[in-house]
Image (tube, rainbow, N blue to C red; front, side):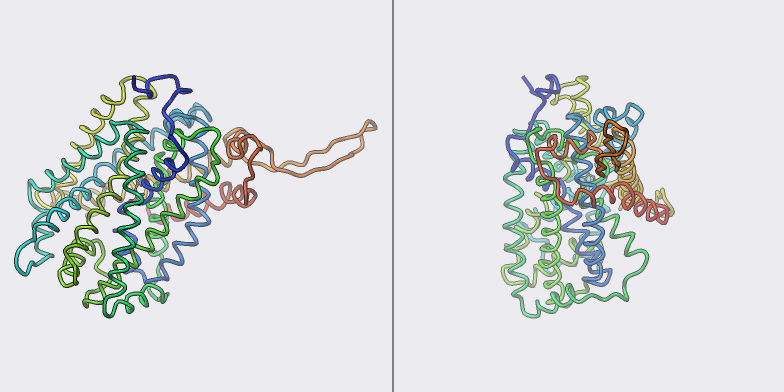
Length: 472
Ligand code: TRP
């Protein structure tokens, strides 16, 4: 019988800490790292963007990753259930995460489909002297192809999640993630050793702070949330399959670590090639689909590099979209409305249907705009990445910092002697449910605990809120 249908005590669990780390890092490492990060670096002044990103990552992203996984491991349930255990009045925060999941899944797999198309054409060339800008526009504006590739990608996504936590998600993440790292390193070595490759390295590592504007900081915060899979409850769901014996702090911090290494490696793998062949680093979203194929064409061993590069992109996109899907599926299976097979089937059909308008929004539906001139695809991306995820992050910080079991707080405890005079005065954090969860009831060390508490209570909500308002 499917183990997800049993009591939550017998709910599925990762078979090992390594399995959890590969799955959670797989969630984090995705198109955000390989596609968005390099083009954001290209558009926002090279390492100036990297520096700003790194600061926000360490001081906001990492603490929130710990907080999100803690709620999940505590609740051993889907996001709605876990938030509900903190307070029944907070269920809507989890529910909002589910809505975010549907929105993310409407556009993310569309790009997964593009990757499949380009992977196919790494084997079967596009023809003599291809014009990649034209090829990209023709393909994405076609009435059928984007939907067909979306369907194939969605099927892969579906199969892995339907197989379950251990036999699907964990098993495939343990294969795809290490493979991804190896491929990325091969591609990076190939491009750095190109003639003029070092010029690209100089661009990446010499900051140009004149390119930094308010928008750079907005982009960086959005990127931190998106890249770390923060704010919808995907990490919370993965955290809910963690064993109560695991070291939550250690497992959590390896996720942003791997995520950042991959984003930097991807930038290092892409930029030198762009420079070496005289392309512009500021191509934006088209960098991967228009600039890179042209670069591969001119590069020695280019078609081989193209095959492994798009394989890498496919793995990254899959391990991320399965985490979005699992968040939604876990809600239905926890409620025991349906078993895993039917829950996954139902959700997959719905998101495929939602994906079609996004897939067509570069062609047939390109004249439909939602937010101030944005296409359907861009609107979904904007709604999820710039509004719902940061808002989910603010709520996460408020819940953990201020609401859960009285909030994180400092107390002065005065022990009085028999005469009623203060005998011992100690200052300390109240060891509430949250801190007990992170430290396994005080048996594990929690490094930087005071800093973490300060960030969760004050820094994260205020900074993200300010940026969020600015965004609107
Ligand atoms: N982090 C992934 C990326 O960088 C995307 C992703 C997967 C995600 N799961 C998520 C983003 C949950 C937000 C919420 O491509």
